[in-house]
Image (tube, rainbow, N blue to C red; front, top):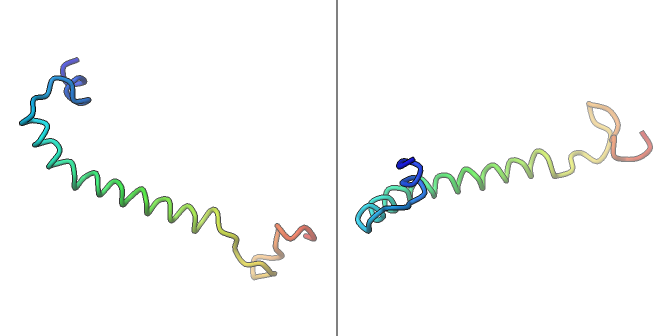
Length: 66
């Protein structure tokens, strides 16, 4: 139970909080960069429209005439 309280920051004094903030800033920036890159990949692969005419995979399924 004590480790759970420490993980959420309950019962920390100022010295421990400063050490935690200084060491977690690079990790937070890394997670932010990974999240932004993941969002970029999702948009590129899943949200943008592809080729609008017939290609090597067949007719456009979103055209309505296929």
